[in-house]
Length: 179
Image 1 (tube, rainbow, N blue to C red):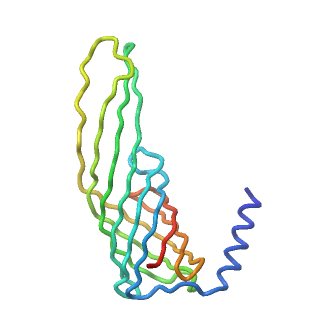
Image 2: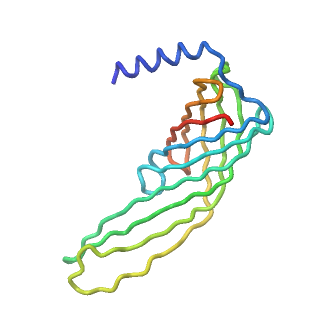
Image 3: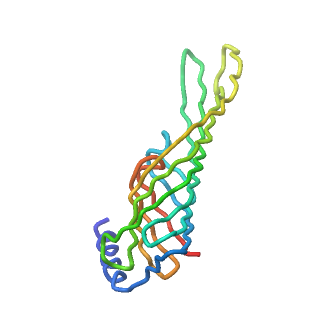
């Protein structure tokens, strides 16, 4: 682990000497993300972000994210599983600011607001009492999130991303492609 960390730091230092960032008004970015922790009770979420830069500092976009998980229950000889899924569809506003003073980095804060299309279903695993199968439920509602994000450009059209925040996972990692 220490060797991996050292190699990563040296690689970032070497690559940061090159000026790859081409962040300017009219740029569009699109990329897949993996969210770690905090996506409902799920440990992972998967999604896609898109952003269009209106100015040097202001951008707008959307986020789509999916997470799912299940919980097993046992009671009095019977057992079953609740399964949950969440599909987040959110608009996004971003504000870009220069933290590192390097054109290889693009840092910004984001605010997301949208809707969670959620569902829950029950499945009996062991039903010795003949209890009926309950109906599935579809629910959802307004959701919001915020994050601090960093893009690191490895080429003029490809960036690695990392975000920390709330609402769509505590940590997101992914890649962005400049279109």
